[in-house]
Length: 251
Image (cartoon, rainbow, N blue to C red):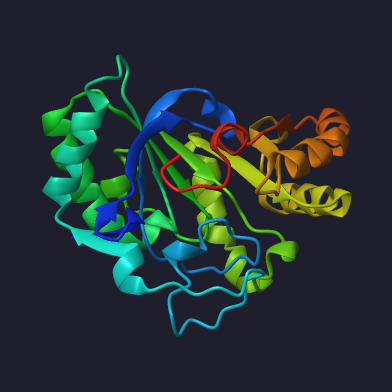
């Protein structure tokens, strides 16, 4: 069974949209948003996947969510069938699994992808992860691209929880990982450079993305992020879905 986020009570967050972030930005994809996370970023824009009533981990909005309304549990075969149905409209189906933290559910996720392969062969799978959990081989073999987003100090997470050297080393060794850092100030880029050096993250595989949940904030931060990326050899990632749909679920 898989625990998924919802777009409305009882309705899982499985949808088709353009990828808004990272190296696949602009591509048509099917998205599946899983519930639960092992970290708690103060600026998280999907806190409804983890900050349920009774969870006192800090978040700048100070809002908690009813678990029953914001989480639904489905059989892996059911999830695979829903994805396959949406993917029929895409000539080159691409699936993005996001969260929350998907690797908390690695075993059922691998079973779901196995079922999906039987229903819709040829799907390219991306997994968005915070990079703290090493994927088991049964799952890793089914994933074409890892979108790894290690959390910086401004996320509010303790360093020893947010940065796991062994897991990062595994993603680097896979040759299938891109490292996307959420940046809120120029000083954050210095932290990225230090992490890149400490963990052998190739500059050609690093993207800096402005933190922000509205288009004006994103534009303002990209104005100073762009020259930083150019100077360090990093790529710049926008958040297209925010410009197109705002900070909303199912986009």
